Image 1 (cartoon, one colour):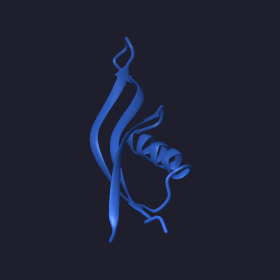
Image 2 (tube, rainbow, N blue to C red):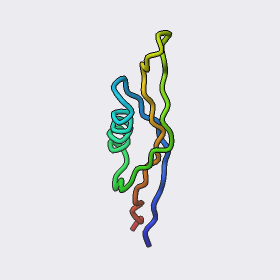
Image 3 (cartoon, rainbow, N blue to C red):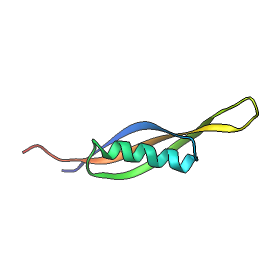
Amino acid sequence: MTVVKVVELVGESQKSWDDAVQCAMREAAKSIRHINGVEVLNWTGDVNDGGEIVKYKADIQIAFRVEPEE
């Protein structure tokens, strides 16, 4: 039997939304094995007084296979 678990994360970057997703994925991969999917749920950002985006944020869900205990 295969079980897939889903967790939600928020990645942040000063470069781009794509980089924010990559940052979240890299951090997740440090402690979660068998990641097999990602879904971007929301894009947000912080804006300075000049109207420029200064921080990009990506709310994502990652799916990973849970190995059965033996």
